[in-house]
Length: 309
Image (tube, rainbow, N blue to C red; front, side, top):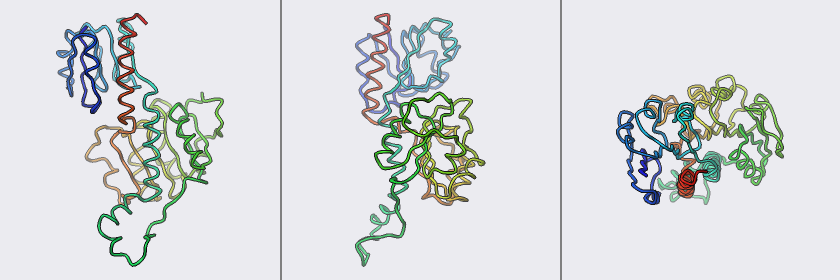
């Protein structure tokens, strides 16, 4: 077989040579839309993270298997692939620990004013101090806080478990309404917005979550509350968030945006209260360990296809 990886750069420093076992393996760091068909012309298997596999691509090539190095499948025309009897295999469950860890790394960085105090020390401020401590900005504990989770899938449940370990009181809102049999209080979104000190989003982007958190929702939140979005861009209105950070002292930890990479004119780049915001470039899924697990599962997906599973 010929296996072609279209966007290896999105996978970082993990070893992709394992795909040589299937025959010819061709690896491209990035692929532009007008390059896709030429690169897949004689491929049996395509490995893609974000490169689009459209109807035109499927018609122009002779693909036997589409492998997605992600959980989401929105970069593939799933209906047309099914019509053409081309299996599409994604990977789920590989990044739960990674996303959970980044969620708390960001929330804790905000609560503990990590950037402010690191800058204070690095600039020489502490070396000039006449006392052993600096308390210019208060730091806060997760313990005793009301911690709301939007989307209680595998990642959301893992985040809930860690929040409980920190001593938080956890509740959740289920946009789908399907979550059952969990040891946490189920609340409506309005109640969560009004009562929670920390709200963490771990939901997919769909008709029920698109634009879920906008100016009306921020108006209901507590002053100084923290909003974390580790679900998908588009769930949170970015202009409304920027306004809330400056007008209500809302704090935010954001790993996903509507447009990725970030647009240079994104309103979040122009807020006044910059210490209230941490933005990371969609890295929560991508711990080294998670990426290794991802590749291992893609290999299994190809082997299963060969074995007729």
